[in-house]
Length: 68
Image (cartoon, rainbow, N blue to C red; front, side):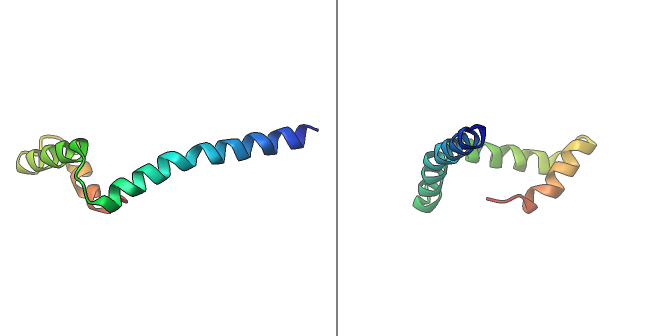
């Protein structure tokens, strides 16, 4: 009985992840630039011009490797 409940809960969790996935995928495929993404790009450009600490330098180094 417990195994059935756990499997149903797992299936419900998986199904609950589908709508955000499809919304994000549709936004990515539409080619629209998100305001948050644009703000991040502006901040990264500012940081590139004036890196101030070790954390900023590591972040700038690792940023090209993140998945989009």
